[in-house]
Length: 91
Image 1 (tube, rainbow, N blue to C red):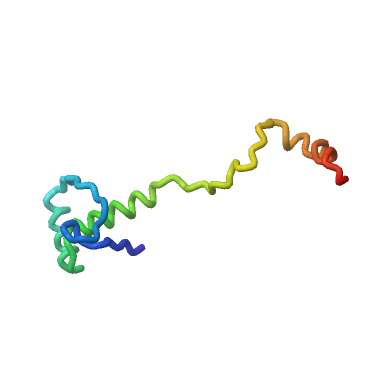
Image 2 (image 1 turned 135 degrees about the vertical axis):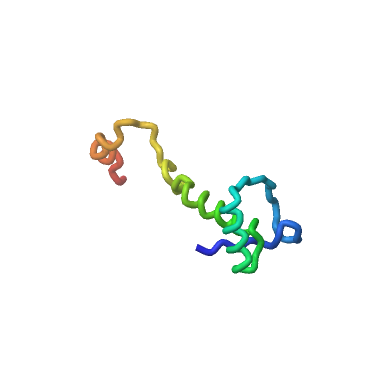
C-alpha cells in the first residue's frame, strides 16, 4: 500500500497537520534513519506512512449510509410482511 504525502511539513502542500513527539529507542531510531536514507526521504515521512497504515487497518468498517434509511420503527415488520403487503392491493 503506497501512502503519499502531499509535500513536506515545512513546504506549502502539507495541509492541516498536527505536530506530535514520538520517543523511539536508539536501535529503532537508527534503523528508521537507515531506511529513510535508503529511500531518500525524511524519517518523519516514514513515521507518517506507518501511522497512516496502522490507523487504516484499525479503523472500524464503514457502514453504507443507506443502512437503516427505510427503518419503519416497527419491530414486527418481518413477521407480518405478508399481512402488511396484502393491504397494499393495487387499485
